[in-house]
Length: 155
Image 1 (tube, rainbow, N blue to C red):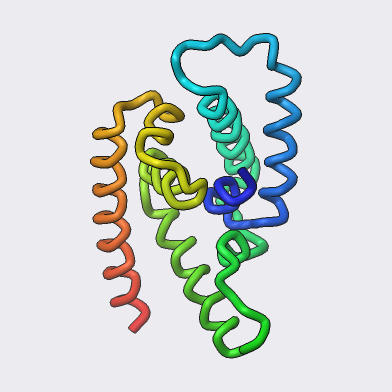
Image 2 (cartoon, rainbow, N blue to C red):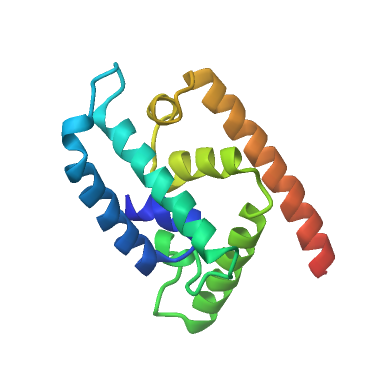
């Protein structure tokens, strides 16, 4: 859960706090859960999504205090130069993700951040697996365009 949230907000330590809030809210609202064919995990991820949206509204697009690389453990402490390069790449990716729609960010966070299958992500999003795969494809295509434009602007 922390990894999914950190992909969305770009700050792993804050993501851990928000993940705790997700589980607190889920426990408090457990008696309101109704089995509608989707697994409990989908319900919990919807709570996480709502918390992320609230958090991002409060932050009002302030830059993340910690880069996204913490979520993926991209940097290794053995090589400082590689660590800096990975951190820069992660920051670049995080900035690029902000150019995507909320739906595209959500599907990428579920598929790659939370490592869900398209079927699992479909349950969270209330969509069919094929629609999730199409959204993922469109999101990746858009991300490639953004990165191409952004990379060209940085050169």
